[in-house]
Image (tube, rainbow, N blue to C red; front, side, top):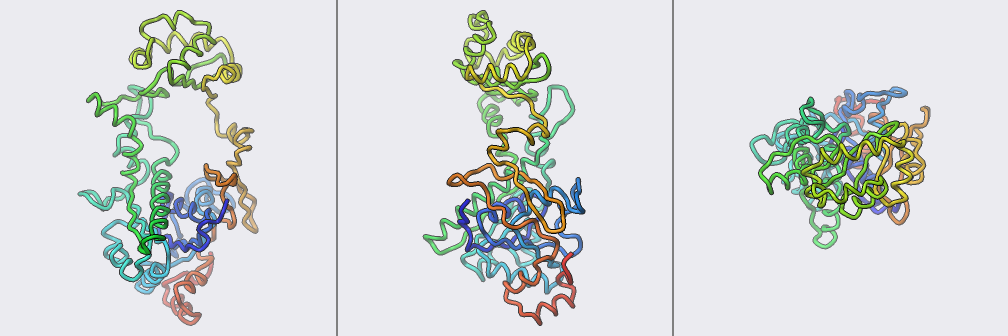
Length: 399
């Protein structure tokens, strides 16, 4: 993939997943990313389970193509170092609470005053405005607050959150898109931009389809298991040996499905003549389709439906995904090699640029591995760096 951002410098003061994933994407496109971490333990994600060779698997997943500087922003000299870094960077990312950023003079106004070309990206839990702007949030909390948890799972079951950190990663994608738009805008205006996004905004954005249904009908959506509220049959069915997801999302595909299942009576049944009617009578349709699908195995149906042009898929477990020939052909798993440690595979970005996937140049850094280099970029000389170390404002030695 072309290193489009090879002349772009990013200072990343975020932690956990949303900000770091955004910064990793920028690094994948060639940006020089300076990851600022607290000297005592660094980014919290370094301790996420499971661990391998003393390193969190999650840390490996979200922190390639970066340099780590261990700087204590609770120390006046450390905070000043971060300000100096932001003054020289192209992009500044942080996940501080809005009030905390202002108190530390790391808000947009203060940063733009010394760097008018800065693309300033603030990622927060509840957003930059509103009565709850200073509340902290994590992915599951934002799923709960936005209503996602009430849309997930089976009717009358316990609350279920989406297992992947979709809000964190979705927030990273909003931030990445905003930063790229800001960099593009800067080419013509010469000025930077203020980019703000949050976990709650991202989570609410994921409800777009269901919210549209609520606005249209006034009816609060209910949990529907694997089914979609917009189409039917569009859900998981039992087969002779497991499960199969079927997505016959229009009348043409529904007809093909019924023909393959040798069920012409379903095409004549007025309850199922349109998609809206099939959605309204989903339970009855499901009961009529599933006995037919139980006649053969999941693999058999997958092949037959594929030949008929009806979208379907087995319900793969992650070990099956890991071995899947299509996933491998797409190069969705990439190997990261950090000297002295066993090689580690991580998921690549879901994008090809001119036929190429992401640039995996540098493994995730050790805590404080690049502190001196980062401070040099900020304009500190060797004596000043030594003084910062002596004062405890930065990490003395790489961990």
